[in-house]
Amino acid sequence: MNRTPIGVRKTRLSSPMRAQPSTADSRQLESHWRQLLEALVQARTVLLLAHVSPDADALGSTLAVADVLDRRGLEIAVSFGSEPFVVPDGLRWLPGQQYLRAPSEVGTPPDVALAIDCSSLDRLGTLAPVAQAAGTFAAIDHHASYDGFAPVSVVDASEPAAGVLTAGLIDRLGGDWSSSAATCIYAAISSDTGSFRFPSTNAETLALGARLIDLGADPGRIAGNLFADKSLAVLRLTGVALVNAEHSPAALGGRGALIAIIDRELRERFGVSYDAAESIVSELATTSDVEVAAVVKQDDAGLWKVSTRSRGGFDVGRMCTALGGGGHVAAAGYTSRVDLDSTLRGLHQALGVVEAPRS
Image 1 (cartoon, rainbow, N blue to C red):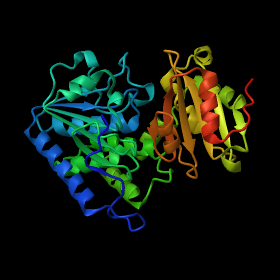
Image 2: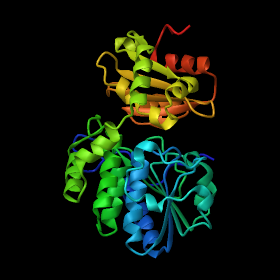
Image 3: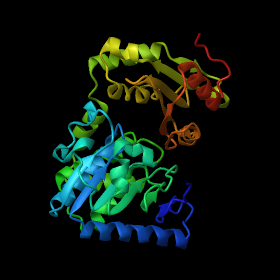
Image 4: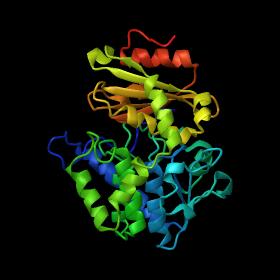
């Protein structure tokens, strides 16, 4: 059943350069903030949910809230519905890992289930039924593609990261910040803004980053863990992917696109996990010769997943949403349900690639 997202706001009140939301939209968003806060204040058990194959925005945000609620005396669990349940290698340094529970360890439905950085119910994976059975089912998200799956929806698609909204939640709960929570939120925002480089970054984002540093986040350490902690195997795989990448200068009306293919056999040859290969698209996107970089990766189950990055002049979020996924202007992705040739054909068409050099 199609539902209009409740509590969704797609503009920010404080920016004069952006269209202002209607009074009704603002009131609706505030109403859902109140409902979420009331539910958390009354709760004894809370399940915090990141999306399957979590990134730093999803996992960092959930772990930060877990830290705050735990110190308020609540019974907390953090999980994501991936099978097998494995925290990505690049995120195991985040504080708060003690709150993590595998889906099989999540027992009866909690008083509150809060999904963070999830645009649709399927992003909860195997934990969707537990979330739906909670006393209060809520979501905090920043995707324009958010489909209103949670009865209580705190959503602002103008924010660069779910971590920004999560920081707002912590403040509304009394602002009982720890250095661990600040670290997790800084990592969340830094990850989704490309270390504060993406076009979605604004003065408010930077001000929040500065405040988190004052609260104990170490920007150098966090940046090193997120962006400069790659194994030699990943670097070698990146080199091969770049050498074999398909460069289409005529794509996007002459702005250009770069597409790399990494199948399961290639990953296994270098001993690189699927999660570790996720960072490769960001490396390809550093070239100034193209507007969009894309990596078509095969996961361990054989599915093809497409990760894209834009320099800001082309909305890859809209493109990926049309192809069954989602994301933002500068970073997005989707899972293909067809074979490689058909996946590439669809991607070529979306990017305006006239010829596909791949034989």
